Image 1 (cartoon, rainbow, N blue to C red):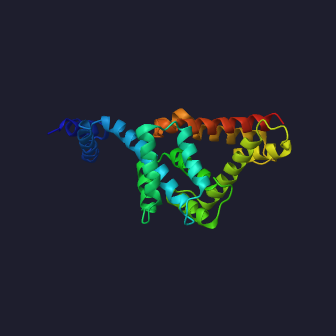
Image 2: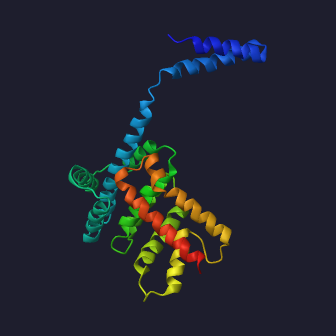
Image 3: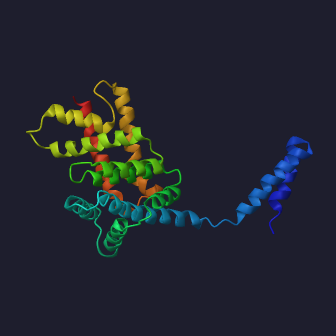
Length: 261
């Protein structure tokens, strides 16, 4: 039985406050300390591993659900999911796990909302991880170049369940559409430079009328949210670091174009 925290807390509380109420407060704090002494700090590492596993499974299972939103999985969506696994370098057991999660998401009765709620609880207050997750799902929804009403409704549910507003979702949709256009235009001399510049502004979430300070602030915020090392430290599966790197490169390229105009 641990009592030293209570004893020392009582004594220090009385010495500092000179009354019994301060002593009792000190004893209570000491009691909390006593209870914390036996904590297994390896739980922190376990928790990180759990978040990574939850992120991985949730990403591909929700992908499967979203792909089936309009009743059938299109060839574009299958190709996107496969290409996404390729980009992540998934092979062997990891690829098999991703494919199985995708299939589970497509099954009738998949607990879509419950899965999202569990994923959010797992992430805690790691907002950047939730943002990355939502961005991945939006990219899948646009795999065929369109966004139908069923897909939009699923994205709305994902965003709302994870704590994002309709405004947040609309803004992300604009940014990701702009990102796709920006990537298509990169290195293409026949692309309208004005259109490329417009896409760069949208990627950063600013307008052509934004000040240099506003643009830099938006850029720094986005880079902080998509920094690969920071995301992995917060629980992003290491296998998904490449996607974070590509997003950071896209943000950097957009910022370089905007500041050189």
